[in-house]
Image 1 (cartoon, each protein chain N blue to C red):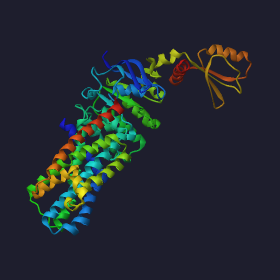
Image 2: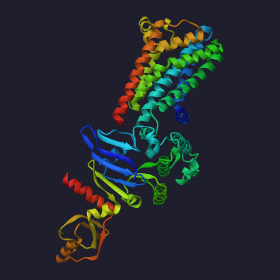
Image 3: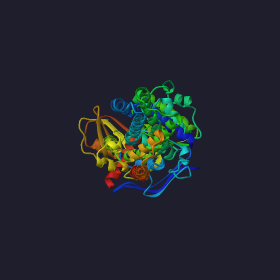
Image 4: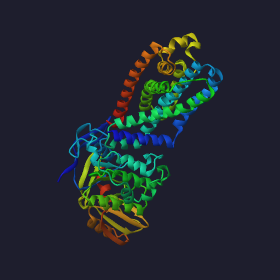
Length: 246
Length: 293
């Protein structure tokens, strides 16, 4: 089985590299936001700059997970290649694994420009172990977004997936405190924020990179969101299978 | 002989539509079977049952002694993808490697590509291939896992005559080596050239299942061709067609037709009576079915 996971991962990676729209959009946006908001306003304070860098890493990873995954899954479902793949001797696992691994790789690549900008133009500081811990928090914290991406991809047409994932992305990112620190946001946003999956995810990342203690409600809610998203993704997958192939 | 694929009383509904109606069919090892039928007859549904894409609503489907839903069973078969769906960004060699990775026994890549005239294109991106090249690649992929049985859906649609004949040679070579083939095609000429056994489906049922010759003879239809300005009403004509000043008439009783023709005193020339092609037999079988339905 692992050789099949490898084959599917290789196939997905080649597609992403040859048509790198998903890769570029995931990498470009957080880097641009970094230059526009973090470098002018938070560059001089090491802790604030490190936290803001973490937020921008999460923005890039969320975009790859939510938008990238939903759109590519929805597009694949519309291709006649999809039923052909189902005639090959493999269950759904290698394809799923290939997708998740590829999305994680895109996330890690998307983080590089943000880290370079942070290192060159801000006082953000980090040790290697904390950076690695931060990357692990990044991959773990985006799990619910990958699952929501799968959910949307299996449920919607590719056109609808493009629209819906974008409409979801910005409010969830803003309410989770990825663009502005939660402390300086209006009262009702501060009240809602811990219940957003983005907040729990970025709390983990901040904690891993700066040693802050994460907001407990945020972390619990991240777990709840992950469980709900997993159920939703599994439901959407079965529903799609049932409709197309039963 | 071993049965490689079998349906027993397989019925498949899509909502209210009955796509297959209690179809029982055995395909034995080493057979080259042509599956014919008009659009919507149930051909694709039948193939989709065999390759594990669909489940029957009732009845059973067996493939290589197991269930086609079992990936391990599907190691023994090869299927052609639709060439419009091939992943455009990948190179020819990469997609062959990807498909081969699913099988324990793999055809040597270069030899496989050589067989389908694609050897020089191994590094070419699929998006840059011509329609005919994509079609040949799609057929080649069915053979990537050294299968015992292949399902070829419209293998030569869109190919020119030369490429079609080359592909036929490839399919024959596989069959001569003991391989089993289920072939669907719009080109009856193709089925006639390749298949020994023809299964005609219509309205979700098997209408005929026999050798190419028997199917042709079974309908007992003859084609009467002649040149005439105008024809009177003639008895027993199943179909008529005018082409370059000549009239083709399909009939089960050519003798009676000619007698009537002579009696009517119509001037004609160049009379020919020939056995029908498979295509004419096919039309006769399916139109008879429509008339009864």
